[in-house]
Length: 77
Image 1: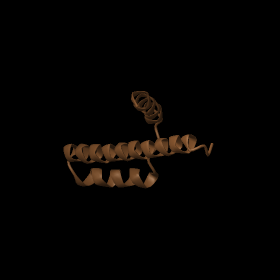
Image 2: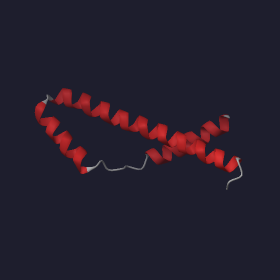
Image 3: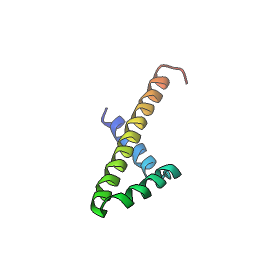
Image 4: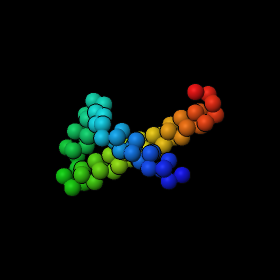
């Protein structure tokens, strides 16, 4: 199990290093928000959004990784 955890962490780190651009609508929304709040408030909002995105990506990656293992172990591949 330890090797599996190490492999998952390694694969996730490789995926996390790839920068995926945010959609234009997100950028426009953030620009609008920036005009309505202080710089400090904006940094808190931006940090919360990015943390949520990263957490969601991590959970989606884990689920896909585990499904892949189940498929291979089940003999489907």
